[in-house]
Image (cartoon, rainbow, N blue to C red; front, side):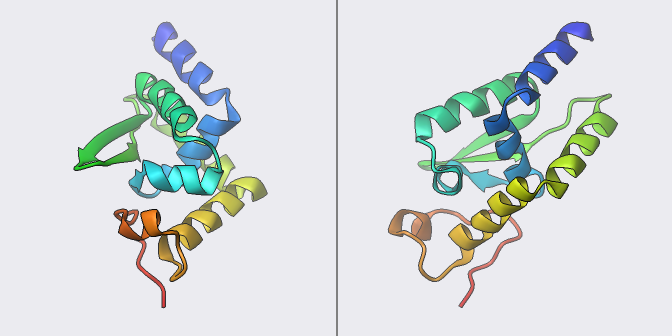
Length: 127
């Protein structure tokens, strides 16, 4: 268990990875939305997602050319992860990211690439 905890805390010790967890805490999200919301290049996002996957915090699935990510919780760490997510939800910067995700996915003026991308679960198109 100590090696698992070390890997987990290393994964949580980076703001970019915390931002990613914040964005997928409630729904599965396509990687293209991470790039848009976080204004970071796709290779950087993918590297951070790989660290989260290795820690057991993220699962991925492919749908054609789209990669979707969702949060997973390692067995026995449910309370710890719930506390982390609760803390992220109260952070103003993390709230801005969630608001930006809602705008990116649901605005009638989204970029063309995002218009064709699968919407995060639970979000609908505005307008």
